[in-house]
Image (cartoon, rainbow, N blue to C red; front, side, top):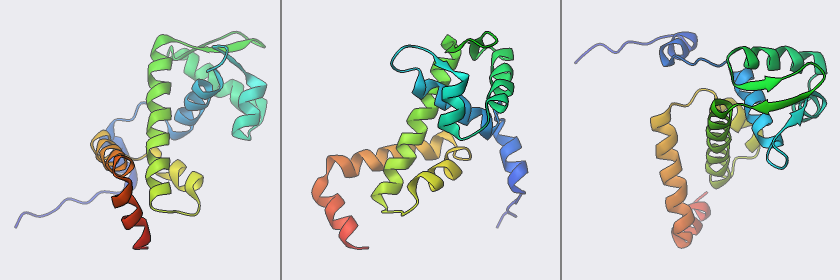
Length: 150
């Protein structure tokens, strides 16, 4: 039997090669959410949506602008770049997939748990969850039976 190699949480995350921090992902996802209607958002809207102070938002938006995920002018609007839109769409889809999964499991604190999970899950696991959720959504009687077992 081969010896298993265990690592600390930080080491696992470093192995994943995540370019964005969890906080940066949250900001980018929220910019994407808030930009649906008119294609942009404002610092104040982001601060309110994320329950943070505007100066914190400005600092993060500046960091996201440095890596070409958003375009931002001081005291202006925040617009996603094409790359930012692609990543933002993925982040929102990941969030929604995990949320639907946790709702299926009847987890009481869905938003809290989604936020904890979404930043650490890998693509393979996310795809498996997405397939499982779709299976249950496409098979209502199996879903009902599954839920009734709890």
